[in-house]
Image 1 (cartoon, rainbow, N blue to C red):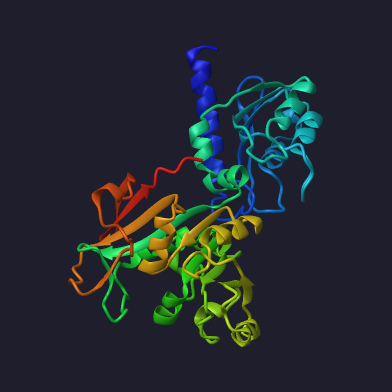
Image 2: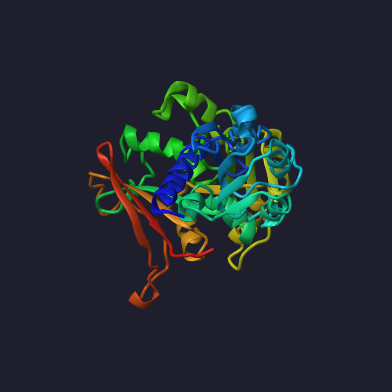
Length: 381
């Protein structure tokens, strides 16, 4: 393939990635996928992306856009076409029926139900298959889906906000507002792309948060924001002894709430929270008698959660970090000083330099008057 042909193919796959990104807030629990179709002369005749679970997959949407022009075409799709029947039919069959000549894929599907069999089905039908192409960009579309399919766990982001001196709240618990409106809008968008938001009972008791996605606070075009807020993430409270107040804001509204506890919790407290609209789930305890966080993440994966956002105080956030359950850290740094008596960012029982937790800063950018620092914990999956 000539250099020009390779560049054209890369540009078309990059366009498919752009299309897939339109489903950033709406496709869960499915992956975000984009598709571009070109005729034999190389002209784009169809485009599509997966918009939401139960709706047409990206390939089907692009085939509909192309119509009869799909015959003899080349299809660029960010993820291997599926060959199994779920809420929609197999994309491989639709591609064969449409008479496409060639399929270029961005990455192989990590779903064990697909896992290369979709590509094999296309080859058996006489369709030329090429790829992967721009695999790194395509993988970045669906880190949570990939992790859930390969490890049976969701991708975990831990979000925190701190002052320049590393404090998150006053000693009294007062924390509104450490960061400004732009950072808070950014958090709304983080929530919208997440399948679940996890917090601790202390945060519920001190801050009384809603932990929902609010369209008017996302700083997006209103139609896009409203679509992003249509399906609210699952709100999860880690509460070993069921101290969540039945009238807490997090139990109200349309978003579902799951309270995770242990056998130690009193039965009457379970009944009160269930009457308030929460689902109460008993999980195994860790060595300290608290909810086992790995068991919690396994449960969320079973519920088809791809990306989980931890929004909690220093104790629970520190526990997630210390036990190696965090894939990505997002810290908003505010140009303020809260003082030495204010609360720290994380509660981490580290006493020696040899025990520090290494992280890699991958991005740092201004968000309004604040800064957002993104870091990975160097966990490979």
